[in-house]
Image 1 (spheres, helix red, strand yellow):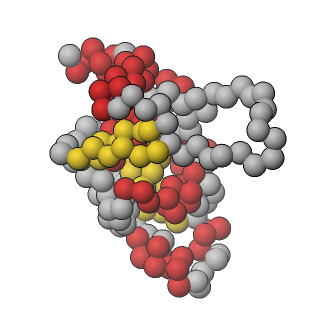
Image 2: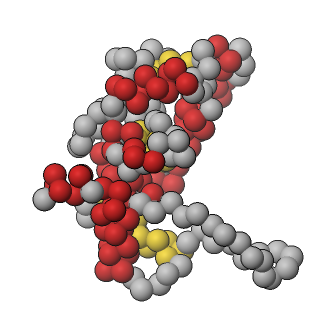
Length: 188
């Protein structure tokens, strides 16, 4: 069953996400979050009331399966940032190693994800940090040029050269995905 699911993850993950949502609530404005096996959290959607005109014609692309990806990644890493160990779910991001927009086939692949704090996700996405072949944290010179700043030193310099916490479930990040990040996103 697992092999079948992984073979069709692009189709079955969003469908699974919708079915789980409907199992726990029929409120379309609520999101269902499974961060641990024994906890389910229902939260209002992040929709904000508009200011200004109350109607606007819009076409929106939705990231189907994103909630599935987030829950898979956070659970794989024990709901902890793989760099810092931060364990506050609202501060954690299921970060894509290879960008969502450029790699549609890898969007829901757990080997394309890292559990990072919001701060470290922003640094990873902008190429200020990466991971080497041994999964150790590497800082870009651009980031180091901003030192000394105590907040940066506490949040980045303290982790330079240290290995990340590996996922407890699934598999480690794919080496070819990290190689792509180092070659195309990281700003040495």
